[in-house]
Length: 148
Image (cartoon, rainbow, N blue to C red):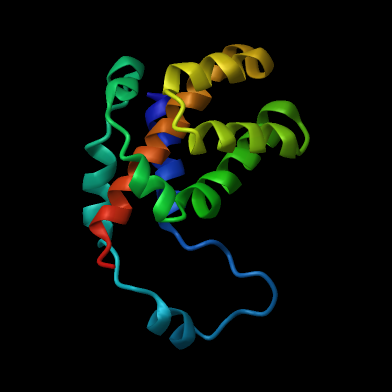
């Protein structure tokens, strides 16, 4: 249940635009340049369509071409991985973040990613990888639902 809440929070955070840095940009400028995406109801449906149990989740097919071409790894997943590593380890770990992103870019299976991060995260490796994989699948589904 906690993993579900965390995954929902991660997916919700992924669905929200990143906070603007510096002075606030005028709303008209940001909304006119953004392509229309899925509605919040559609996003919730995407979230609920993603398995929450480890084995089911890890068995899901990952559409790597979509993941790599939509920019989700850098724009959405990198900041999330960075934040999680800081939470788990107490400090910024760019080398570990790059390691995880490199594994994803290399289309590494979830169980292998989990085994690799377990060397550093110990018992946190499974919940981290489950959340990571749910976010990855969500970003792929969101990219496919967004008109190009």
